[in-house]
Amino acid sequence: MNCPHKLEGDTVHQEIRQWFRETARDLPWRGGCTPWGILVSEIMLQQTPVVRVRPVWEQWMARWPTPGAFAAESQGEVLRAWGRLGYPRRALRLHAAATQLVQRHDGAVPDTFDELLALPGVGSYTAAAVAAFAFGRRETVVDTNIRRVHARLVIGQALPSPALTAAEMALAAELLPEDPAESVEWNAGVMELGALVCTARSPKCGLCPVIDQCAWIAAGQPEPTYLPKGQPWAGTDRQVRGAVMAVLRAAESPVHADLLWGPAVEAAAAAAHTDHPDDVAAALQKLHELNTHALQLQRALAGLVTDGLAQLSGDGYHLPH
DNA sequence: TAGACGTGGTA
DNA sequence: TTACCAAGTCT
Image (cartoon, rainbow, N blue to C red; front, side, top):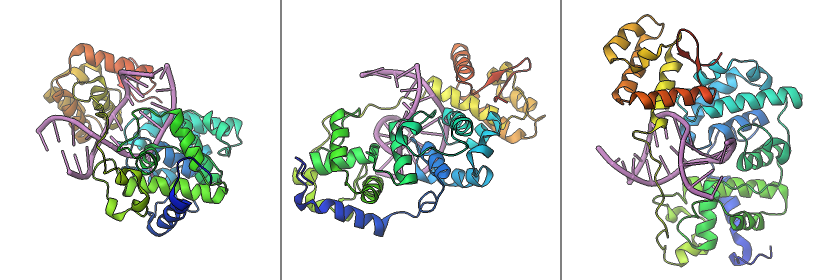
């Protein structure tokens, strides 16, 4: 392979690909899945664990087996189906992407990196992943798992840098096998290794197929050189937006702002008139428990409207039609 | 380019 | 219990 990062005898590629064939999880979007199914899975898996994506993906594909079927659905229904996967803007972007597939790609998922990258919600990782896993293309796939495996196995560091660097992309490109089929298995294998063995916390080095060639092990497993910065949550707009979205998903009719802001008992009583009183009442209860400042609630609502996740009609807030 | 953006499982 | 973390993207 002739790369400056000497991987002893280049057995790493063989070892990891074999480990992948023997150990890989049997996920529904692997093996014989349509490109549409793979695209949906990649969007859902952005920052969301496999175990939570799986059931939603199954329902999603049964309900909307093609981009055309999905594009014909309303945004509100799409957001409800998205459920609690998180980052609901992804659902809207997927919907917009499906519309583009119908309008510009004859209802099919394009098979090149550049065309995929042009779709809403599809960035460099997802474009490469779909091109590779749906169409067998040789692409430099770099996700958080692959970055971490490379950092340890090749560089000898506990964690990759906080932000993706050009050097990391260059390394990933360097390590990519020339043969397309092998490159696909390599990408999937390294990703799977990062997800199952070379994990962020408490890596299972005893199960690693390439532990004897790991630069991090060889260096004595040095600690990370920086502290991961946390993801603020309590008291943030994000938390409020999430609670409001839970209410709107459960509500069958527009929810007046007073209800979002008002006391829980009043909210529960009003919610009893909806088709899903328990869900709405519970969602309102959670929202109210946040004791959100009025200004912050206004900001969260305005943000949701700006992002197209909610709309304000005369009667109140609701999911988009 | 750093920050915003949901949600729930795990240690 | 608090904090980290998960197949990122967009601005």
